[in-house]
Amino acid sequence: MTKSATDESNAASNAPVELVIFDCDGTLVDSETVATDVMVEYLAELGMQLSAEVALARFKGGRMADCVAELEQMFGRSLPADFTKVLRDRIAPVLHQRLQPIEGALELVQSLKVPFCMASNGPLHQIKVSLSVTGLWSYFEGRIFSAYDVGSWKPAPDLFLHAARTMGVEPSRCAVVEDSLPGVQAGVAAGMQVFALQPEQVEAQLPRQATVISRLAELHDHIRIAG
Image (tube, rainbow, N blue to C red; front, side, top):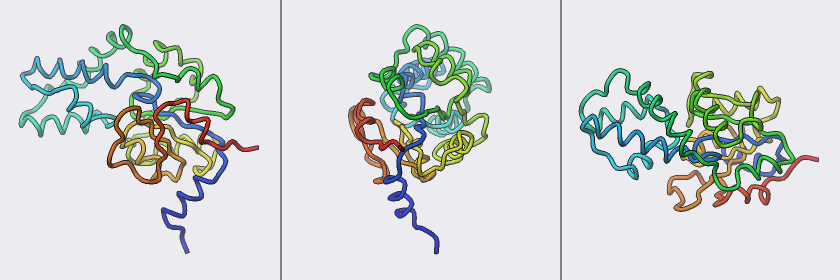
């Protein structure tokens, strides 16, 4: 008899943690806000009016290709063929100017007593910029997994499972730290312990298996380390 999703979730929640898998954007660095502001400005130049609040709510944590497809459906017209490239080129210098780590991010990775890595929907070059600007690169170098390298994006669990397999840890002994609904869904689908960073309003559709935290510092109070 196979275990139900609830049984697997309960097993994961009781297991000691041997690996923490962090998301990047919105979890450790405040890049979601910066990128959204740049996108909204670019869209306005194209005659497409969209507020930053709506854009962030609809596209947070999602795959860029899906974002483009939804924008085209919303406005009933095609975006320029080079929209994604131009947008990323515009975002990069603004990240250098404005990007900050999420409150408590540096302190958390400096104090964790368990191995950790990163698994992000973003491309590796963008992740490197974000981590370098915020002083986090040295903590993750060599332990970063991008959906673009795997060919599978959250909310599919493949990226998290790939990270766990590469790091040599069973999924049930991994803790995922995410801020977006797709990321939380991916962690739950992977059978991992999931912590949803929700500093303000809690996402109504969060899976019940996720543990909500309002600050990164709270992670220490929730994970049980092996040994």
